[in-house]
Length: 365
Image (tube, rainbow, N blue to C red; front, side, top):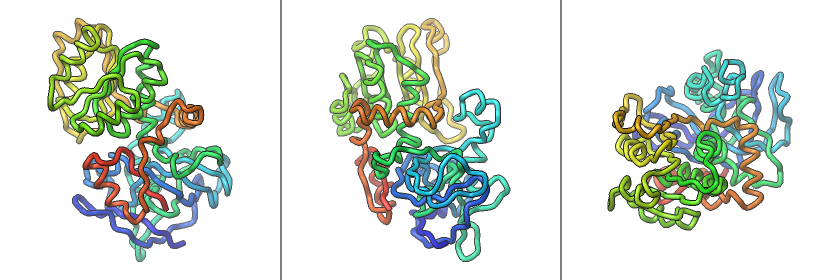
């Protein structure tokens, strides 16, 4: 069938809106007609070839839509179901069967290779293959064949135009707090970077009833937005020493921290800001080869813990319904992060996100 897709063609190039051919769904695949898709930092870094996804390729990994058809062996969903899409996993490796699918042994192949396990692609352009199955879904297409394990059935009462970001950025920030840090009520918390991932972490810290919630960024408008969403303190890292200010606010150091930036200097600041037995989580992607240093002679004396976290260390099929329930209860208003764009304006949405004027762009088909 013919579909409309935004195709990444190489570093520095805007996505090209093209008409592609889409194969029938194969075994273990679900054909989903997209309603909307979030745009995530990972889409941008793959577009810019930080990671070796073959080009051309259809990216997108925060899709939401309606099931049109299922391939052989699919049992999780049926045509007409409303679904949210998330990352792909094998389901059989040690990490998957022990409840840690974000660390699937085949994560890179399943999410970044642009191909099925047999080496084929679901999209083609005049007979030439175009990368598919990005994060099991390639949601920057009007219709896509999605890996069954990437599909989560959601209630039809929740708007699909809103849900996409739960599939990656929102669950990454919220999961880092609720699954990994697991802060006690009344504890202190800081998030570095107030994009969609950082704001989701902030909202999760509110769910966890942290008493002090600090937001650090260099974009003042985002800091003001963080204040509106529940930050008790805001720090502009360009205008003051964040470590000193955090220690002043917390009386010696923060209990829990999240770095969403992947920046070496910010990572060091986060570690230096920890108090006794503090726990920090790094969720921000950095280019391969990026290195950061910490003062191990001082840090060891605090008993601090540093966790590297992928996709919020979630089991999406249980964690995402939890976030939807919290949203419906009014306790997790992630909708306040979202701005919608027509699908044809996808490059504008990327630009607005990269310039910091939009927290979480979502393209609507």
